[in-house]
Length: 480
Image 1 (cartoon, helix red, strand yellow):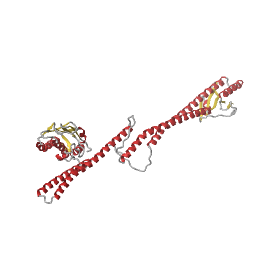
Image 2: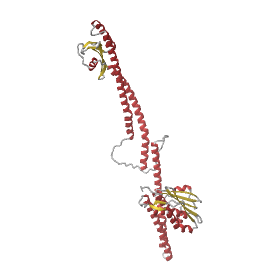
Image 3: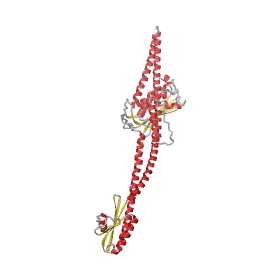
Image 4: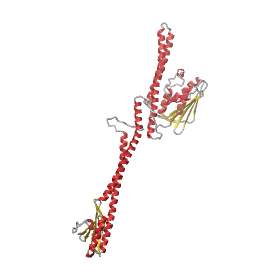
């Protein structure tokens, strides 16, 4: 059993719709932003790497040309080489510098740093014959390639280029991407709002119906419009089923109060009529007084029986009566019941036949179960015409014992079978006046069998008879 404890407090009300919407945004949009940001960084990294490869390749080409013409040793070819380098730098729109083996700038296409010493990490590594290209703060790329003359490193070709165009390209892509992402986010939010509305609207309708039911309007029902079966539909159907059961309980309660009033009113009316008859006859003979007092005493006994049975039922419902389970021989118990009721059967010339299929032992409260089975057999005898028969059968399987009582009595209409265990319910309203019953026997029997974790079922045909089957577990669970 699942128990849900709801503690009433002054906590602020937060709509489930907003909770769902915020959850959708966190789960749906934030990951999109993270993915978009990651992709933009990857694009920027890709462009930077491509630029580094391009510049390093160009640096190696220039370094190869300088090595071929022996730039540092051949003064005649230096001027033409510098013109070629300048054209390349202007054409490619980057800066080319030539440094000697001491890292001093001997040529600069920008004419700014000739004579200066560049102790950059890239230059140092190139002087060690390690061509390298690095980006500084994603703003400038330095590509350095060594110039080899003979077996010595004569110098370094250093190409410097700005990454402003790469940043502009990435910013442009990012702008378009974020615009697209914003449009997508708007679409997602609209869809999420619609979905949250679609999800929470049925719940709001259910809450409204339940609130009305709590005010006493038990006829309220939740209208299920969805053609798709899901948990919300299940919840709505469960609420409607609960409302049906509550309506039945309320109807049963009202009927019960009406029946109790009627059952107690009848003997009280009889007592009043009898007592008034005595009071109005001043010279009534003693025999009349005695007869009327006997009748009054009988009506009082009847009221006492009704009240006692009602108290028993209330205690059974509230489980105030403890069950004393013990290993009981059901074949012996049923045999004793039949022997005790056999005089009633004999008085009506009814054959009371006990058929014990096997000896059965079960964990039961013998006293209460004896009363329950006695009620069933007693009813079978009462409502079986003279010369009929009542057959009591005891059998069992590996889990349950089965006590079956079949009679050849007047039977019960099929549409009445489901109500015979209701309190004070009578198929024929005049029967209990004739048989002396309170109308609570089968209700007590049903409650007793339920407390034993068993079941009781009835089948019947009018003018052919009735069969009652009681199932009782052989062993009770530890929870009892």
